[in-house]
Image (cartoon, rainbow, N blue to C red):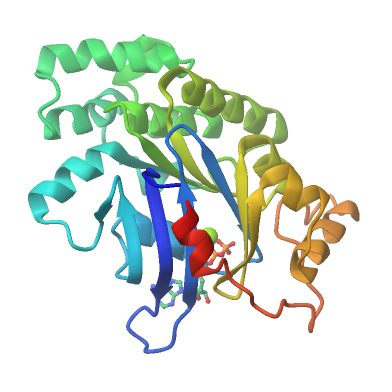
Length: 281
Ligand SMILES: Nc1ncnc2c1ncn2[C@@H]1O[C@H](COP(=O)(O)OP(=O)(O)OP(=O)(O)O)[C@@H](O)[C@H]1O
Ligand SMILES: [Mg+2]
């Protein structure tokens, strides 16, 4: 299929070390769909997310709406960046503790010239309401909110410019289970309402299954298995994926929110998504 919103092909990241930490990663995300990425800690999930957001140099290809991200001029990148937003585990990585939340939600609108000050104030109220908060809270600071509320604020800021894609890196991993569920509901509602696509990274496989249409399983910097989420989770073909799924079935309340540790020697033979598969999309 052609015309995916985000098409990543043979992505490699070496952080300037000359040794690839991420290698041969390929996937595609269609408009309005969610691709989940799972894999052990250090497998390269956040690195891929940062490359897609233009925060980490990469080799290979990452095209957003058909245009290579790394090759974009400053002006084109600005326009792309408005359509490509992020929500991370720690809201403080996107929220400034010294700035009122209303001003932070308004910031992208003002920076991109999407609204003047008055229109932005109105839009902030609407956005706060849309994410389940009281518009009167706009004058408060991030520390005056709970973790779940702060993540709602980060989401309000991320959706302010009606983005096509939001990169969510462990967006609910720091939240209590019930709060986590509400924030996931919100993300799903926003997807149905606005057709936003997500690149959704999480340790919790249940969360990824609930959120994703497709999933890519990463191990040691590569995608070892990918496909429709039910297919991959119900009929994993890769030994690493199987181990990952099996490990989750062993209850361990303390560690449950972290990726299960995979026994040594069970890492996969590293078959990546083939490039043919990449072209098919
Ligand atoms: N800026 C950097 N410079 C050098 N190496 C880095 C850098 N950032 C990450 N790495 C390395 O890249 C590898 C992948 O890290 P990454 O954060 O992408 O993994 P992850 O899958 O997101 O892990 P986690 O589940 O713990 O968040 C790790 O070995 C990490 O040490
Ligand atoms: Mg990470």
